[in-house]
Figure (cartoon, rainbow, N blue to C red):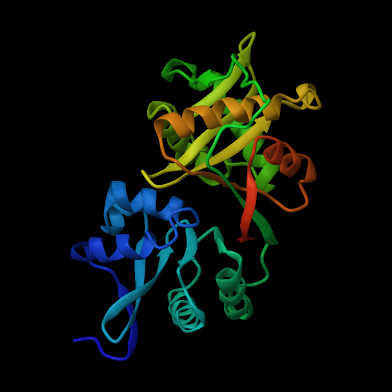
Length: 281
């Protein structure tokens, strides 16, 4: 029996307890919650391990350890325990991302062992809305991307990723994993775009979805079409789909230095409710 505090890899039978922790903050935890709801806690299906921190035998905090390292509902003691486990395991992730307070502390403990990072983004506003904006007409040309349009959407996805992250998603495995992820979003009907003459003008995806909250990601406007307000009307269109079909709360997080994007999101009704932090390797 577990006593005091300890950490271990969660077992499949602890799914309900893990979901209860994730449900404490359905907006901030949407990314991990969506994966767990689909895949459970089996590491092979989940794409990584789910670490748990227990106090007096009760599961209190989580840390997803896969392609990303994500602290979840983690206070200082849990963060220290997760950092110790991560340090002993060695770095296997390409980024650390999560709510800014816990992620800041986690990185401060891991940086002496894992650093330097390629880039640290210490403050990424987390924005939320629960309704459609007044006075903004959604772009009627933004629609779901069809399964037979993978060759059309992929160049835009690669351009967005490279611009946002600073490296191409085609590096390493030639883009097989990234292409599979794009295909998953297209196949599930969560990829949206405005396409003109066979080229993507605007795109965005509902990247994580639960019945409590969903998260929009991958927002991109082709460079030659920027400055025309397409991000506002396009986001309004995607937001409409998200609110009608997915969940009552829609979120996203954005780099604090991207003032144009933040202004566009505010025009669509998003409000800042917190902040994420990302450490990129």
